[in-house]
Structure formats: C-alpha cells, structure tokens
Amino acid sequence: MNNFLDLCRAAIGAPYVITNEADMVPYLTDWRRRFTGRAQAILRPGSAEEVAALVKLCSEARVPVVPQGGNTGLVLGSVPDDSGREVVLSLGRMNRIRAVDVINNTMTVDAGCILAQIQNAAAEAGRLFPLSLGAEGSCTIGGNLSTNAGGTGVLRYGNTRELCLGLEVVTPQGEIWNGLRGLRKDNTGYDLRDLFIGAEGTLGIITGAVIKLFPQPKAQLTALAAMQTTDNALALLTLAQQRCGATLTGFELMSQFCLELVAKHYPQMQLPFPQPYPQYVLLELSDSESEEHAMETLESLITSALEEDVIQDAVVAGSIAQSRALWDLREHITLAQADEGKNIKHDVSVPISRIRDFIRETDAALAEQFPGIRMVTFGHLGDGNLHYNVSPPVGVPADEFINRQHEVNQVVHDSVNSYNGSISAEHGLGALKREEVKQYKSDVEMRLMRTIKQALDPLQLMNPGKVL
Image (tube, rainbow, N blue to C red; front, side, top):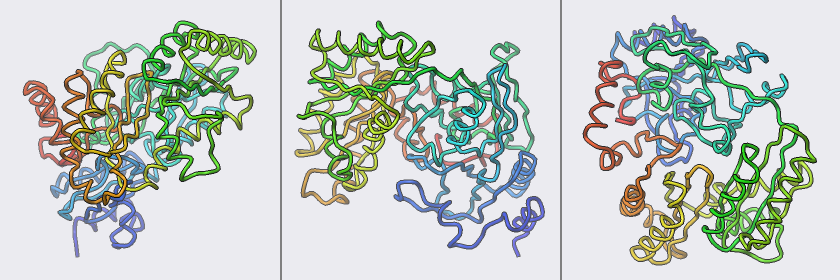
C-alpha cells in the first residue's frame, strides 16, 4: 500500500484521490490531445487548507506537484510528464465566489472558479469582469492568473495581472500566504502577488484571488470592417483610438483565409459581405453614456474610415444576436483550423507599429522554406499579440509537416526576436517552450529567474520541467 497516498486520502477524503487509470486520463492529456503524461494520482482538494496539507505531504515525501485548473492550456503547462512520479493537484472543487464588494468594485474567488461563472456573478451584481477568451466556459481564474491570460479586452482593461489586486497562495513548503487585500495602493515592500501571476505554478499554488470589477457599460456595439492590408488595419486602429478613446475595448485582426476555414467547416457562419477582402477587423465599443452615443461614435468612425479609404466595407451589429454572430466568426477560427487538421501554433507579440513588417517578412521566409504552407494569422492587433499559425500545404500529410515543427518555430521565433518581440504573449512557456526561450532571453535574465525559483522552491517540486 502506498503510504503517501494513504496520507493524502486521510487529508482530503478517499473519493478525492483518484488512482484509477481511466478516470485519470482527462487530467493527464493536454487540451490539444498531443501528449498524455502519467501520474501517481489526481488530488482534488476542496479548500486552501487542504491544498496546504497536500503540498506539505508532497514536500515531506519529495513528490512533485502539477497544479491544474481547467486544463485548457496550449503549452503543456498543466499536465504531468511521463515519469509517473508526479501528482496532479486539480483545483476544480474550489469554485466558490467568496465575496462581492460592489462599492470597492472587487470580487474574492476561489482559484477553481470557471471564468464564465465569475463573469455571470459580476453581471448579477451589476458589474463587469472584463476578462474574456475562447475557453471561458472551461478555464479557471487560477489558470488565467498563473499564465497571465490576455483575451479580447486587453486593449482597454489589460491582462489578467492588471485585473488582480490580491492573492492567496500555498507555498512549496505547505504554508498559506493570505494576500487577499482589495487595495489599489499597497506600497509595503516587494510585490509578491506579481511573482506568482504568470509563474505557471512553478513558485506556489494560487488558491484564491481578489479581482477587479467595473461598472457595466450602458452599451456594447460590435462592427466588422473589411480592408486590403494590415497597413489599413493599423490605420483603422489609430483612427479608432483617436475617435473612441477608452470606449474601444476590442480590436481583432483576421485574414481572409482564417474566415474561409470557418465558412468551410461551419457553413452556417457566413461573412456579411458580398465579396471577400484580404483582411478584416472586428472591433467593439463599450460606452458608459448611452447606446445612442455609442452608435453615433461608431458610425462616425466607420464613415471617416470609408472616406479616407482605410476600409472598403463595414457592418455594424444591430442586435445582441448579430454581435454574437460576428464574434462567433472570430472565436471559431481555432476550431476550424483544428478541423482542417494538425497545425503549428505560435502565440507571439511584437510592437504594434511593426506588425505589418513582421507578417510580411516572416510570411516570405516561411514560404521560401516551406512552399505551399497556409498561414492562419489572427489575433489581438490592439495589443500586438498575434496567433500566427501555420497549416501544412494541401496534400502534405499533417504528421510529416508536424515533424518539421522545430524548423518552422525557428523561422518564426527568430523573426519575432529580431523585432524585439516575445515568443509567448499570453499562453505561457509550459514544457513546450521551456528550452526554446533560452535562445531569446539573456543569461542575466535566466539567472535571475532561476534564483527566484531556487529561493522559493528549493526542492524543485512545484510544476517541475515547466518554464525553467
């Protein structure tokens, strides 16, 4: 009998220590179903105290811990390796909304709360939690914080880091740090909160958070604009920022090929234009004054963009259903690409002013080395984050193309680095980019990161093999 697992059962209850292989599989396989690891057990604590008790047992037994939220990550950051030594610590049972403070505009939540659950709870309180991304129906706020997730509202509200005021964290030694302070100003030493946000569970396990809420906008309007080039898209961004200011909350770039894939695999979704255009921008305004004011602002923007030949056509959603339909086009790109077959994904960021040159130069370099490849380029143009994805040429077996992933990545990431960008904008490093990032970070930066890791997790038990 495994004494370590017996102690875990005693700490959280036998039903919450999963060792049956079939029941473990969903926790061991990554979202893209490219890798399945092995683990001693899946541990499902119900409170921060139970997390602390489990981590203390893991520390004493020298058992590595892989924290897991919704397991929706794309870089192998939330699944164990294939050694079978690790345990997966799933926070799915920790899903309480602990408190809502409408005057302070904050909400205190368990780390296992599903993002959509938090959005709904905020709306019920007459507030907005603006983090929004494709996996919001299954990802958790703990995972969002651990990867510093971005999403579609970064332009106005910032990444998850900017939406968090305080954390509760279980340290690698099994202690609970209670930093659940809903303060906008707290200048009392090192900002421990920011150490754990974006650390992918390698420094400790986030078990709770105080997050920011905002007033519900009086109106949200969506428009889809068609244009010839990414230059036009950048010109529209500049114009929109000048005309709309802080009401501009979303600005998403999509190429024609992206939407061709959506129409191919989801024929019920059709573009609202009589002819195709090379590029499209989906933009959203959130207005605190009135729907009339929002519509006036948006129509003025569209009129100016048409008159200045920045865009060739545009449609403004006239209802919630029409707005949802436009967003569905954007959100189904990833699904459509998956339906098309295996592909190579890149989550990169470059300075906004250099996006046009990056796309043009990198597209050309890839086309020269891999003739016939198909580029699926879309993303958050307003904050410089592109999902720069590559599908194999027609007729080339997907597995044959995937075997050349390292060569493709080298071209893309070298180009990103030459533009002073980042090879991971919002997905994290996980195990997938752990080695590759060493090519692009300085020795000083890597040494500082290792120093922090060693200081907080000297036994190297927190999500080992991820990030570092």
